[in-house]
Length: 167
Image (cartoon, rainbow, N blue to C red; front, side, top):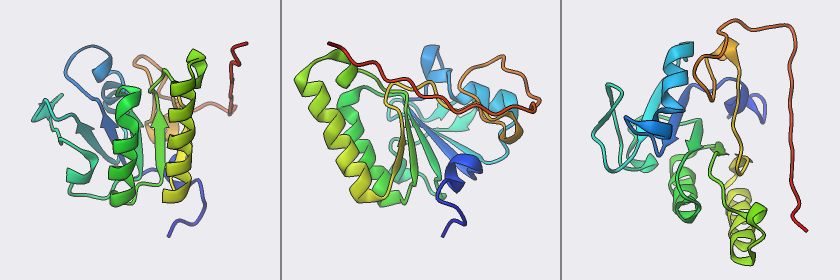
């Protein structure tokens, strides 16, 4: 049991990147973790690969042999419900949804999917960051959503949220 409800966010021991790949945006979350020196376990997840950036890749979160604290989702919106099932089975406590195309589209079906995801996450005890969120930059822990970010922690912390409501 975590000492604090946000322990997995502030001090993850492991991060799984779902939708990771060896090219393009799929490298975008794995590469910064490696670059900033994340000290925990990094698990690339993509059923199309057996290896990503020199690390063993797993077809699904449930196939990862170790504990997973934090999952970054870089998959299409339609796959998130299944991902949450895997995360619940694995005991994941935090999922970051870089995934987009939910209520911000203005489509009723996309907004409903977002509500269904929120309900499933609550029922499973999973905290969500996002959807459509860049992610976390925490240099002291070696966590970044983008390559080229400074490795040194500063003296200022920022937590920000923006929600666009379409007419």
